[in-house]
Length: 369
Image 1 (cartoon, rainbow, N blue to C red):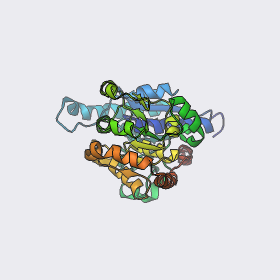
Image 2 (tube, rainbow, N blue to C red; image 1 turned 180 degrees about the vertical axis):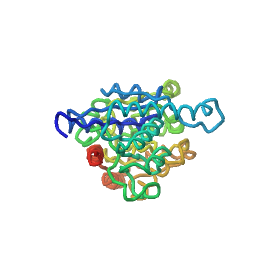
Image 3 (cartoon, one colour; image 1 turned 90 degrees about the horizontal axis):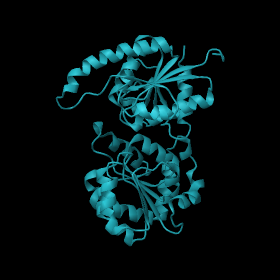
Image 4 (cartoon, helix red, strand yellow; image 1 turned 90 degrees about the vertical axis):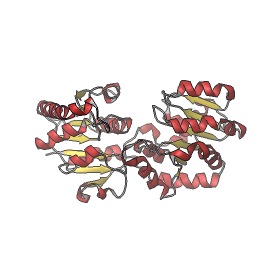
């Protein structure tokens, strides 16, 4: 295609940051490589992509779609109607925008738009972030041209002939964070001669991880370990109130950390949930990590994500129910074990795929008619 006929991409997916941020990373890679390309996002009305995508500088159209609730609700009664309405709107979107390819990242909105693309003979590509395939991606994979994955063994869910190992796209600033160590310590006001643990529970927060930290905070202050602690916005005020009697100059508590590259750079050890996006960032940040998989996710896929790293000696895992009693002790022991930290950092670095976004763009362009 020439400059007069720029590539046209529809990117769809959302509901959670794990679907949205990889999609935005791919859009950024398209824009970097093909400045004249036309990009349209399709999301679900009322979901976080409707805010995050415009903030990243892209246009998005919303579909009236949501997931099936596990219990009987009024929402489930409307679900078949939503699917039909969204499918018809998706057809109109494709007819008007005329994409050369549709890239789906999973989530509520990806189903109708991918169905419409397949129905209208528009090539489609799927990007599956987790080691366990999501429902929408499994259903759409039968007619997709290619499936981009981040974990080995995905032929359990998809046609092996369609699978391409690309990795998960992440933000560029996560790459080479080791060069930002001095800047990071200065940013957070930390002592370079002390060990630092970074605790993450996602943007909303993780109750178990927060409870594990606050109930064992004296162990952290007694060992003179520095803590960068993202509580998540739901738990910030509660944790701040509980911390006040144990306030320490070594603790940096935040509801949300915007400068994640600096947080990774400052950390000697990371404590995190095991979402696909978090793990992909940790692999590129090359940090030893203790993973506490969330038990409240479909098919326990976070445990499967974490196990993939543990099998390669790239991470430690603590199950959610044991975190309050074990997490802080394990984190302190690890942060002072330099030999094990270096070994884990080496193994996790081998799993990083810094060119994932570019590779997905290449795969998508190859499928264009």
